[in-house]
Amino acid sequence: MTAYLAGVCSSALSFIFIVFAIGALGYLVGGIKVKGIELGTAGVLLVALLYGVLTHFIPSFKIDEKTIFLFSDKIKGNFGVVSSIGTALFVTAVGLIAGPRFFRSFNKSTLAYILLGVIIIAIGSLTAIFFTLIDKDCTSSMAVGLLTGGLTSTPGFSAGKEVEQAIETDVTAGYGIAYLYGVLGVVLFVQIVPKILKIDMKNEVENFHAANTIKIPELKGNLTELDPLGFFAFFVAVALGCLIGAIKIPGINFSLGNSGGCLIGGLIVGHFAHIGNIDCRIKKESLVFMRELGLVLFLIGAGVPGGVNFIDKFRWSYFIYGAVMTTVPMIVGYIFARYVFKLSILNNLGSITGGMTSTPALGTLIATAGTDEVASAYVATYPFALVSIVLAAKLIIILF
Image 1 (cartoon, helix red, strand yellow):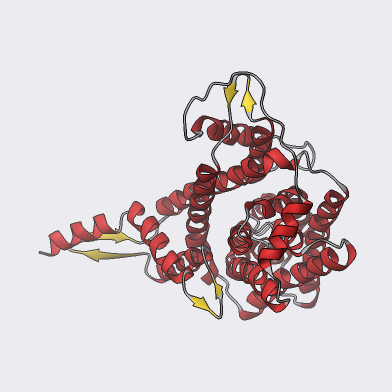
Image 2 (cartoon, one colour; image 1 turned 90 degrees about the horizontal axis):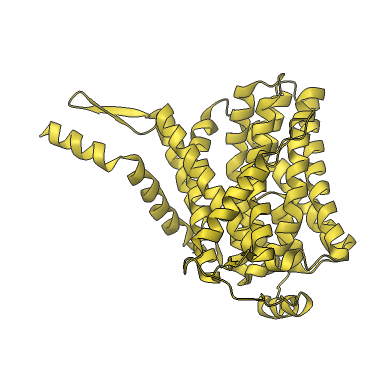
């Protein structure tokens, strides 16, 4: 009987089961509404983090001499793959949706998005430096971990670990400690602000569409559709994005990584919409599906290891530092967007999600607004925030 039970547990707790069980439970949690506010897809992150915390204390157990693993180095690697695939799916879909309009919509607001990306990261970096100065136990490596976790920036996290002077365990632990609030803080912010301001979202969306109307030219000639779901075009965009992301700038060892590269790849394929006589247009429904699937996989893949790291070197002071590194740049960015750059509420919040490099918050904002076009502000801000956080992560460790 125990041997049979061991076999059942081994099968039930397979990696595939764990991934989909976390996703199912996460959607249940995310669907709970409190005064009109819900976690949505971020509920998946919460469940993933809790699973990671559990496995820190119980990584495995035995039944009839058979070891059942809840978490191991091999499983950790699998979650890394899930996170990478999820990121590629999500940002590529965002790029493909925004592509037809993005390059055709450059105007004076574009400069505002660029500046917001830099300002938000600069404020976050100054906050991180401040905590290293007032707390001698908070190393620059820990501060960078907290900063990149608070801004949910995997490329920044990776850049910090690459620095020769970095204490890798501090960077990893800090990232895990700050990551939960880093996601949930921005997700809740983009829902709470419209409610506090009593925004008429329907009216705001109508005004947004009117102000952002872009004429997309019709494709000329006879184009061949290779597949009805657009997988060819999607895979080309991902592959192109990975190549772009792998390009490194000599001297500073900077690259956009797969997340930034796939976003650019999606924008390029979405803009041109064809390769020779091959039609690369993809139906909106397919892109929405890819975007949501990618977001869920990213949250599961990043959340479980983040939960494991959350316990390592945990201190309440570090958690508070990370929360401040999320909250202060977000509020300052909102103030600049509203009062200095005079952006509409949807462009404002879209640029905040881009400046905070918050993939989950963009998903929440799209659901809140009811339109994918808010992603245009995210797409315009994100690359500059990404470059800024990667450089900041390196400089903070080197200089402090």
